[in-house]
Image (cartoon, rainbow, N blue to C red; front, side, top):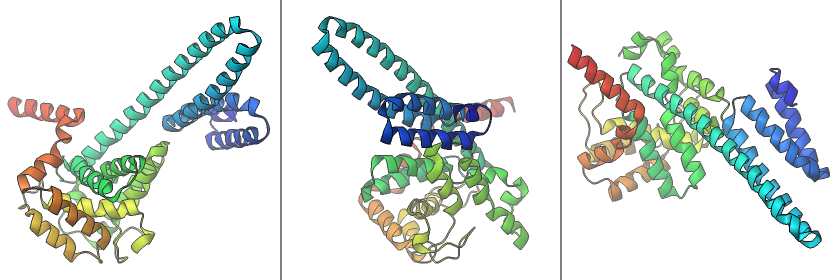
Length: 329
């Protein structure tokens, strides 16, 4: 399996390793550690650092059980040698920790690159640069209100950031056109498929939800959306929630087009009007209740939602570059 991965037959090799690991866990525990190490190496070679990290964490758990059992046995048989064994075990753990840091860094680097691409996609579409941060912030707050677990909220927030990344595949003149022909509209609708395909090919397990949301966040609750015309609960929960956040955010913030922003009250009224048709009524009510309790006034809400964008290194770099261009001009 590992040879297959290194020779380019990635899916075949990973399936073989998974089967071998599954058998070893049932039949021969002495082989599990070696196979877990192979799975780490294979997924790292396949550019799937987050999956490699999962196997590494499992490897640490199995190794700890083995070490604990062996140390106890040594203490019984030869107490004088147990110190050397512990030193060896400590060195092994340091090696695993270094590998874990490397995998985490690789994953974060690739995610940061995708977020930068998503920012560029929003700019290309004529949207506000802060949208990549405002929508996830609202989604995060609503998910906390709903009691979702931390891991699910993390994946939701990432999906919200990357939901419009498929806009990068759209021609600029089509993105900026106000009156699309039927043929142009069909092309535009495909940005959802392009985004899903891009994120799906990343090889990162943490983007599986993001890939589904990229494809489904323009589906409507009554089945009139695109690209598949999904209806009601056949649309992923995360996509239904993000659709509400994605629509509300621009309503209360001045978009790049210069259109007048709505007040919080007017925006909520507009969202409630579309509940049951465009939006899932449950998530619209969750949004309305959160805003009623937490939002404050319009300026406070905008400052709260835009805060994270000002801390993003890519956004700050773009701002410095634009300032330099302005001064040069």
